[in-house]
Image (cartoon, rainbow, N blue to C red):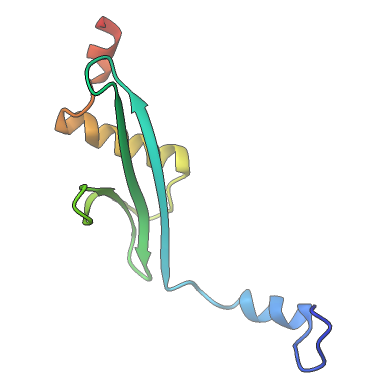
Length: 105
């Protein structure tokens, strides 16, 4: 409650906002990962996107200002799961070593 005479009270705001469904959801994140060969650090970023009523999409930044879909989920992935999905896609592309190759280094 801001105390302004024409501004609705907190209880009214809560009742109103509890009935509103978000139409779009966008959360971007940037990560870094160290590797054993040059350039030694890989910076990557991605986002979780949803356009209601569609599913949540994990998108990887291609480096050209565009995003590419990695995976889709019916429920929003946790940030740890989101980071692992991006990392797995980088492994599939050969940008970082596969899990079994990491142990051999």
